[in-house]
Length: 505
Ligand code: FAD
Image (cartoon, rainbow, N blue to C red; front, side, top):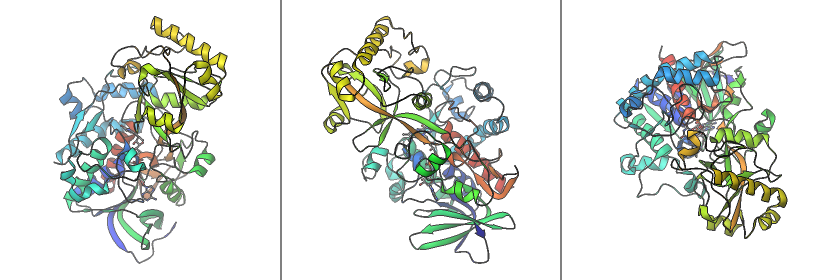
């Protein structure tokens, strides 16, 4: 925190901290309105976790759903959100719903941006749910369209972790396509600049109004003026072990799916230093993660076979649950957790990001292979009698096609990833495998309290003038619920867009 004083190293209308989907959508809204805009990114590449993502975007009732003819509506989405979240955050819900169609129309007006519907069921059996969902994704982006800018977009998680860039011959897809398309659009306005290796370190104020930021760069600290406002969209604090512990977020900084060390709560810390208030700080977008040889997790979803046991060798949940719900079951149970499967799966009976290979996992000792269940129990340290009994009981359910314990396979979501077939498959053909599962997350979802226009609120409940937040830097209006695929990115973009509309007023 500090006073703005006189001298600035650079002056902008809008300064955006972070470069995920919310940050970039906000920057585009500002730059396309002719506002001189700077995107500050701490690392050397743009996109953060948003670039790693599948880029499903849950913005209901827009022209994309209309084109796809899926029968979506603002009203249906309201019914669904209301049933899940209640009315505590009704003003945010209404702002989100009102903005979704306008935001998508604004984005698709840009020649760089185009979306298409992608079937992916909503996550809860609640009124207003659409069985094939209502989310959409950006179209793949040929790398040539980005030219030299392609090197600025964070590569997919497997290549990024290995220190490799994008494949020169392949188009950017999913989260990379979203960030790449937003980057193209921002660049084309002529009013937006991206500054990588520039980390927000503090906020500058004049008479209680935020008028600029301090940032660390390779050439030393800089002071950047923001005439209209500062938008904080620099992720959550998932990679800070200390903040996670202080706030009681289950899982671990080493098990998050966010890019290594990127999101350490800097923006939240800077805002609280100027009087901002926070909420929901013990929450994250949770998921199961299968451990890979480098000790990092691979986001695991869509189980179509196998079963997960806890440290007692027993099942404790419907393993095919949507990942945030399964993550919450892991948080409540006692590990270590293993996904147990057999030769018939021909590898992990699930989707994982990054993809994992059976031979590599077994060779590295990350996954345990055994000829019998008793041997598997001995090698994992699980109680042999309990593990054998659990698998036997599960195989009985597989034979009947009915999971009497946890009702796996009864919800359309459970069946989506097994192509409509049963997701209960007997585990009976050696060799048997045990893959260790940890509680991972896609980012924390608690942070700065905001009003429905993204204005950061102080501890008395009033806005901090000139300060805005979106994405995982802010407390999500969804509370501890993850309603459907694309809510993190959809809501980050919607509130960033609203923040910029407010700055323009
Ligand atoms: P990020 O996208 O992580 O961006 C934050 C950025 O801020 C980072 O680049 C970081 O380096 C930068 N930063 C941090 N500190 C500073 C600082 N001091 N100064 C400047 N910059 C800073 N969600 C969906 O909605 N749909 C999906 O399909 C989806 N799929 C996913 C798939 C995977 C594999 C993963 C890992 C996540 C997925 N998610 C998905 C979750 C979603 O990607 C994140 O929750 C969301 O992108 C977070 O957005 P954000 O802008 O808050 O943070």
